[in-house]
Length: 256
Image 1 (cartoon, rainbow, N blue to C red):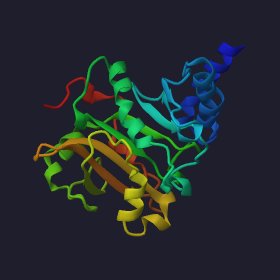
Image 2 (cartoon, rainbow, N blue to C red):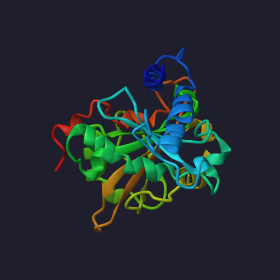
Image 3 (spheres, rainbow, N blue to C red):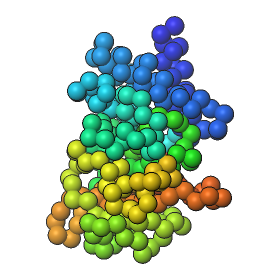
């Protein structure tokens, strides 16, 4: 029976990118009823790839392999947080989900069989109305090759302030800023979005953002953050996940 439950949980994970009729609480059920208890009671994260309960379940983060995509991982809090619209994402005790998501790149690379350049990996979260799951989750995956190349070529144009990025990325326009942090540990990117983008704090539900690894010309390692929002009547908007490539083509020939 236990094996069947785990199998069903993994199958439910496909609902992340599935139809609207899918169980919108599938991620929460998997993490809350399986991954976190198994880690706590048996020191095993299954069916997740990894669970960090340092500081307790209120501060924990689970990493789950999404069945959609070659190597895509999802970083999910082990406490109940619905999504980008939830007030608690701006609180001081927010789990270190962005840092955990970046650390999960090693699990992605393990699936691919080799390391990737920093700029080939990105993290994203979609707007509330553009997601299929009602538990906060960060997509950890490869970048579209042309998006990675454009960001690498123009990384020097990003500053510590949010500004319009002058080039379309997969057909979309974004605000962009530079973040000097090697690993995002302790960084609350939701706070940077809410504090730095005009009107974002009043309408977090419609916001979408991504963080892409970067090397800057001054030698610093950091990230380029992208932000946009969901437009009424244009359902193709509000998906920062669109700058990622779940087929991971960039892994076949990583950029120089």
